[in-house]
Image 1: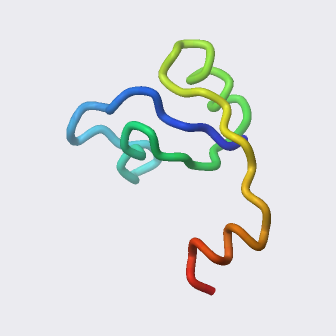
Image 2: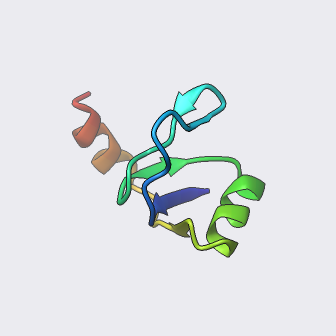
Amino acid sequence: MRIRMLVQMPPGGSRNGRPWPGKGRCEDIPTGEARHLVASGIAEEAPRRSRAKREQEEGT
């Protein structure tokens, strides 16, 4: 599930050893975890990017 962060997580906070995305940034994470973040108001569901858009943003 793709989410957009609504808050900035504390410095040093991580998710599976990686830093949390910043406020306003999007990331794909497992559905159960994503639903928990959305329910708690930390994130919102974000629309999925098309393959062409994703490749354009990643420069491939």
